[in-house]
Structure formats: structure tokens, C-alpha cells
Amino acid sequence: MSCLFMGGGNLAGAMMAEDGSLERNAAAVSDLEAELLKVRSDYRQTAYTLRQTQEAYGHFVPKSFLRLLGAEDILKVNLGHEAEKRITIMFSDIRDFTTLSESKSSGETFAFINDYLGQMEPAVQMHHGIVDKFIGDAVMAFFPERAEDALAAAFAMRAALDHYNRRRGQVGEAPVGMGIGLNTGLTTLGVVGHMERMDTTIIGDAVNVASRIEGLTKQYRVGILISEDTLASLENPEAYSVRFVDRVAVKGRIRPVSVYEVFDGDPPEVARGKLSVLDVFEKAVAYCHLGECARAVPLLEQCLKEVPGDPVAALYLERCRGEKRDSAWEFRQQLVWRDDFDTGLADVDAQHRGLLDNINKLSQAIQKDETAVVGEVFDFLAAYGVEHFDTEETYMREYGYPFLAEHAHEHAAFVRSLLATKREILSGRHDMLLCLFRVHQFLYDWLISHSTRTDKHFAHFVLAKTKETSVKAD
Picture 1 (cartoon, rainbow, N blue to C red):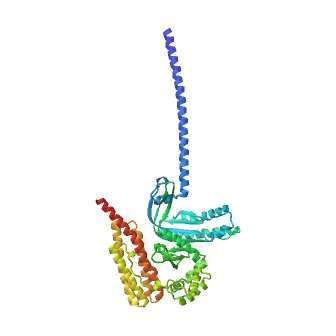
Picture 2: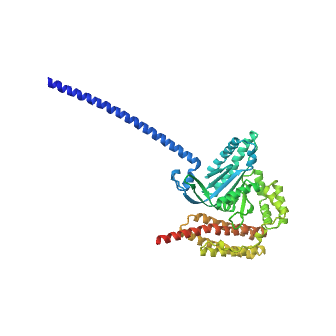
Picture 3: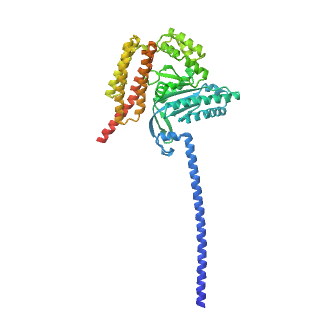
């Protein structure tokens, strides 16, 4: 019995010990579960904070900008990160902002700017645009896909402004004016600054020209101005209501840049009026630039009768009456080849010289009204242009040039302008002075712009590729 009792006692002790262990184990499990719950809670909070942080960064650096840089998120972007793109750049700002803000407190000014910008940004985003930055009352945006997207956004911004002004009028506020400038070209998108302060930005000549064009909207008092490069980048420029406005000097450019007004977004009656006298207006402007002011004045008066208060027609009428002929010499002279036109690619440069020689010949024949010679030169230019473009595009395919498609589009724009001018001259209903102006405006300008910027970019690309191949071979 004692043995059984002893055994029973040992068993009871063991059971008590086991029960204690179970209690301790249960307590440990409970503590572990609590720790796991805390870890999970902390993880969820960290993940939420990270998402919030990413979203906050997205307000300063759009995800679409990062994608163009080839980065998945802001953490993958480093100082010096860059990518080269052909894009359309937009600048827009409020007219007479200083006057508008003088009667407001700083708080009211900020509220006004944010209210206004809140109307503009959605118009950019819905047309595949990216707002690069806000500069006070100004918006700098870009469109990486098509120039048409930038124009669609500009129209949408003007429509949003009309709605915004109606709302301001209901509370007794004065309407707000806006100017928009567009330019298209090769740019570098990237990250600049230093390790303590970095920023994403776009740099390049095309950006500077876009800013300059936006500034001109104040001088000419028009809503939308675009550059010759943006006009040439449109797939179907005839789909828009466009008129030539002026030629302006731009720092770093050999020849003045042509700028155009797109007036589809004007009030319907104004747009119809401008369209009805478009041919008359273009002829008058050409006469002004050729120094034929006496012939331009009655045409400009006709334009102002149809569209009273047209600021561009009024400006040219003032110029003509003041006998300002600053640019007349430009269109009476033939263009001489300069060393800085060379790209460094011998075959390409030789063909550029051939094109220039024949454009000079065409200009001379137009001034002498030698229609037969004009026809011959046009035929030669058309055939020679195809040969030249084939040479360039073959080079580009061989070297894997990433902007071949854009380059080919510029070639197509030249052919389009050439054929349009030919049709006008050979129709028998042409005006020789207007045709002379268009030869300079479209053919000379295209050739010099193409050779000194687009083709030189390709030449630098070829040189870099050649060096890279040489280094690998060594």
C-alpha cells in the first residue's frame, strides 16, 4: 500500500508539475500571441505610413515623371538620374497677376492662386500631361506623347478659365486672363541639385523657347501661341485654326523663330471672323515682313473691319504706319552656308548644301517670277529631298538612333510644306511675294533648324556610339 501510495504521490506531483508547465506554456503562448498582434499592428501602421509617404511624395514628384526616368518609385531616384525625351512643353500664367494681387492680403493671394491652379491642373492631366512645377501663378507642364495632347489641354484650360470667370463674376470678382505658350523639342528630364536638396526638372533649349513664347502672349494679346516646331509636330495641322503671328529672335538660334496663334479656343464669333479673313491676314503679314507696307495697310484694315479689335492685326497696322521694316532684309537675301551649319557627317552635310543651293535658286526664281524655273526646282527638291532623307534614316537605323520616328516626322513636314508651296505657285492664283515669304518661313527655316539642332543631335549620338565601339574593341 505504501508503495502504491508513494507511487500515487509521485504521480500527483508529476501531474501538478505538468499542470504548472501547461500554465506557463499557455502564458507564454498568450504573450507570444500578444507580441505577434503588436508586430502585425506595427507592420500595418508602417505600411500605411509608407503608403501615405509615397502618396505625399507623389504630390511633389508625379509617378508619371518617375516612369519616364525608368524608376519604379521615389526611392529608386538618385542625383544625376536622367532620360532624354522629345516632348511638348507648356508654360501658362495669369495676365496682370501683380495688379490682381495688389488689393489682396497674402492669405487671399494664396487662396486665389490655389483656386485658379485647381482649375488648370485637371485639364493637363486628362490629356496625358504632367505638371512639372508651379511657379507662383504660372504652370509649367509637358506632354511626352503627342503635340496634339498639349493643344487639347490648352483648349481645356481656356474652357475651365471661362467657367472659373463666370463663377468669379457671380461674386463680383474681375475676370482673369491667361496666356499659354507651347514648344516641342528634345529635352533632358532628370534629377538636379545636391544630396541635401534634389529636384526633378526638364532642361534644354526647347524649354527656354517655350517660356519665351508664353511671354509673347502678353505682347500680342492672344490666348495660345505655338512654335514652328510644335506646328510641324502635329500629325494633321490642317485640323486646327492656325495663323502666323511673327518671327522673334531667340537666344542661341541662328534665325528668328516663327510663332503661330491657335485660335480654336477663341469665342466662336471671333474665331469665325479670323478664319474668314485668314488668307487676307497672312498676305498682309507677309507684305509687312517684306517691307511692302503700302500694300499691307488696306488688307489689315479689312481684317480689322471683320474682327474689330484684333490685337495682332492692329499691331501690324501700327508697324506699317510707322514704316518699320526691320525684317525686310531677311527675306530679300539668299542664305549663305556657314561652318556652324555642319553636323560633322560628311554625306549629310553635302546633301544639306545641295538643298540650300536649290532653295536659294527657288527663291531667286520666285522673285523674278520665272514660273517654269520654279517648277523645275520644285521637282528637283522633291526628288533630292527623298534621297537625302533616305540617307539620314538609313544611318539612323544602322546606329539604332532612338529618335528615328520623330526625325522622319520632321522630314515629312518638309515635304508637306514643299508640296503646298508648289501647288500654290503652279495654280496660277498665287502671289509671288507671299510665296517668297513662305519659302523663307518653311523651307529655309526648316533646313537650318533641322541641320543645326536635330541633325547635330544625331551626329553627337553617332560620335558617342563610335567611341563606345572603339573602347570595347580596345
